[in-house]
Length: 109
Image (cartoon, rainbow, N blue to C red; front, side):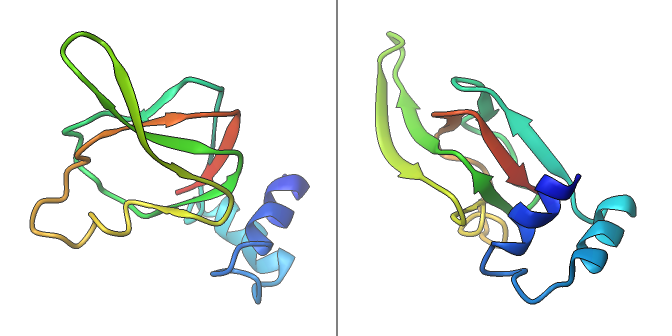
């Protein structure tokens, strides 16, 4: 858990939080850290975006997969980047593309 606290405290949104505050948020399930392995799908195209997520470590690929299974990487997000921020409060809050783990990653959601 100490590793998670340090990762969270290094983010731009939570750098001023004390380790005790972050630990309390994790304990009370206000913060949830999820780990994905390389090539795991995080969100599917068309999936409802229900929360804002922050990449704590690793890299994420935003991909378009065509009907033949060909993959086009549209963007790559890294540590401290936000997933879902542009979708969460939009009138169409669905992921327009697939989000996959490019490396092993940890996400705060």
